[in-house]
Length: 412
Image 1: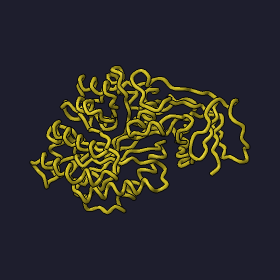
Image 2: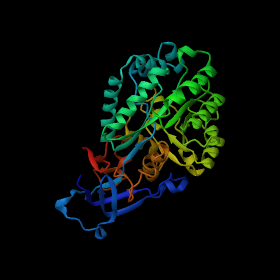
Image 3: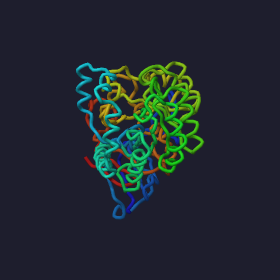
Image 4: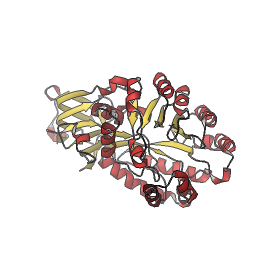
C-alpha cells in the first residue's frame, strides 16, 4: 500500500494518549498549513508543510486538503446496533403521550426487540449492521462500540457477540469494540428473580463470553438491576477479565454514578439524573462520563449535565446510543448540534469528547483519537476550513472524506 499524504490541511486535534479532563477538553492543537503522512496505516508525520520529510509524489497517494479541516476519526462509544425488530410503532405511541409502562404493557419495550432478535439469524443481523456501519463511516466514524443485550438468553447473546466479532474480522470501514450486555433487562424466564438471573450471568455467561467481549455492561436502574446486583455482576466480570461499563442514572437518581466511580469503571453512560456525589465520584476515580444527547432528545428528557462534569474535572465523551427503542438514530451531526446548543459544550470540548475521550471510553486512546505520530491513520476531512461549521450547519453532514487505517473508506 502506497503511503497516503495529505497536504495543506488545517489539522485540529486534541493531544495525548489518555482522556482529557475538565478544562483540558477545550484545548486543541491547531496547525494551519499541515502535511500528514500515513505509512502502513499509521501516522508517520504530522506538522508544518514546510518541515515535512521529502517524498516523491509519484510514489504516494496524494490528497490536497487546502481549505479543509482534518480531525481525528470520530469514535461512537455507545451503540446497540446488533438487533432485529424496528419499533417505529412504539415511537408513534410515545409521540401521542404513552408512557414507558403503557408501551411495555402493550407488548413493546426491550422485550419486543428480544423476541425478534431471538428469532433472527446471525446473517440477517450482520447485514443490517453493515448498513449502519456504512452510514457511520460517511459521517466520520472510524471506531464504534457494539453491545449485545437483545437476546437475554445464552444462545442469542452468543450469536450476537459472534456477529460483532465476525464484523470486526472483515476489513471494515470502522473498528468495532464488542461489549456484553446480558444485564440489559430481566428476561421472561427469570421474571421476579433478578438475583437468580445475575447468578446465571456470573456462573454461565461471563466465563463463556470473555473471549468475545472486551467490556461487560449493566443497565443499573431502579426496578431493573439495582446497585447491589450491578456491583455483584461487575465485580465478577472484572475477575473474568472484562473491563467495566454501566448504564447509570438514566431514569432516576439511583447512585449509578457513585457505583461507577467506586468500581473505577471505564465509563458510566446516560447520566441524565446523576447526583452531585456521582459526578464527584466519577471525576475523582477517572470514570468517563459518556453522554448521549440524542436519547434525551428522542425521549424529550432533560439533557445530562455536561457542564457540571467538566467543571468537576471529569472526562466527558459523546456517543449516539443507536438502538431500536429509545433512540433510533446514529446521527453524528445532530448529536454535535445538541451537545453545543442544549448541553452548553463548546465545539472544542465536543471534538475532544467525540475523538480522544471516545477512544478512551473504549480503551483505545493509546491507538486512536488524536492526530499524532505513531497512532493509527484514522482521520476525518471536512468540507470546510472552519470546525465551527460542525454545530452551525445544524444536523447536516460536514464530512467530505473518512480515512481509516490509512485508507480512504468514505468519500462524500
